[in-house]
Length: 169
Image (cartoon, rainbow, N blue to C red; front, side, top):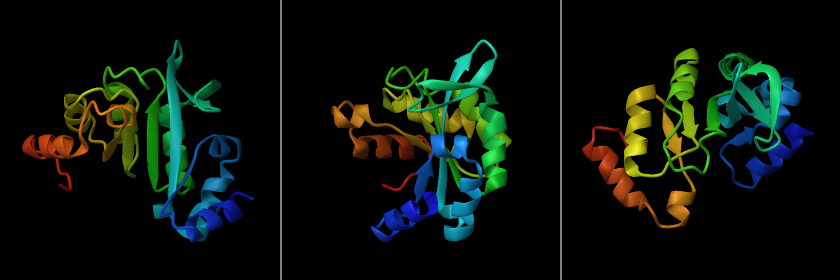
């Protein structure tokens, strides 16, 4: 079961459990995990993409939009079910290096009280300061710019600190 799998991961040293498609398909899993391990341990990853009807939640690695399940509504629901954090990935921005999706990140951050981690689109240091200043998100995630050496983590931390963003250096 999901709770047993989570227990194995935590016993192996993980501090938190992140769930995405499983949460959409079985929302009670969020509550079960929060009751068993505490909300601080439960991160619900929300993949979202902009459609003609709004920001839809997507599953299966962002490949399958869920008709009628909108990002802000889902964010509120996962908070109510016991999630301790939201990892919000803009499918539209992911891998583009054109910047985070400020609009939806700001909407979700305003809609919930739990921390929101912005993901999808980071391409340069300025994108990080922009997402923090414009949305109030708690954290921002990037991968490829670090893997390919385009941005140095230490340099980014110093840049953020110099620009008034709280960061551990």
